[in-house]
Length: 230
Length: 229
Image: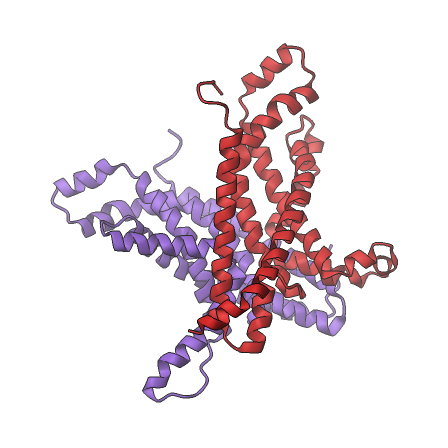
């Protein structure tokens, strides 16, 4: 089953490490954006609710590839326009890694917004009422009572999103980041064996998703301590 | 913001939209046709039949769509037997490669959605059909599948939206779908923001149309008011 890689194994390994780094960084950004989005969607302010709603609807409705291209090519236009008044006339370019983390983080965040919103709403409202009755403020209630439970409730949904994210990292090869797909294309260019190498890349992605499945199961068990089968 | 350029590009973006629609529609139909036997195998009474599609589903759901497209478009040409076969005129075309990859990909997800729905059909209904003398296959065709399709519809709607978004990857193998059209216009005009924004709005439009269509289908397939389902 292991294809002959003509010595390109280390190159693919290097790409795999970049893929993992990209996925983890985007996930971290996405979780923060998702919490902010859910907070906005559940807030008392109609403006914040609208902002949260537009964010999650728009970014879930347009292709990830388009988001990636938009951030990578669009951001430099915006950044250059913003820098011109300060006397900077040169060309500004986002690094593919930063652009990739931004694009994937934004997409992950849009889906995570809905996951977190569902998790927060799944916590019985009496708990917040009890906390308020004990004299806790809104912020403190959220931090001490709601948030610690959100993790357990949101974990299965976030796990699915991470699997999707892991596969979407392949898109960042389009803007030149040297992750697994890009490194594979490099090896294909040298060896003229596209099937061998794309199959090898596919198997590496499968390995990553399989490992993630195992890790997620362990995390869910841990997060569910004290909430065993009742 | 160059609004005039956005308006000028609309005809070309609209042509791209048409290609995107074709890709999604053709691979959607092919995907469903492939998904039905896979799902039926997954709910078989025989353990070895259930195990047959496991690798298929695991591979297609566990690897990026981009890898699958490249495997079909670049990968198959590595083999002389493929290049010399009668299929080569088809497999040489980016268009058909995209359709093949998308169909296979969506068939795996659709099969899992359908399997879940089939298993969610209350066993009492199947027993009732069997008690009335329906053979297993007929009960599957007349009772289980119609019920399962209705239950699978909302999840399938999400899958169609994911397929629409995935179809943007066709632009990586030279196809001029909506994203591909946007990229060629940008290569000439160097106005990424305007064109990608216009393309994004068009994608959102298509997403909303799909959401509406699925809702309409759900209403059409719902049992008439007052009847018990």
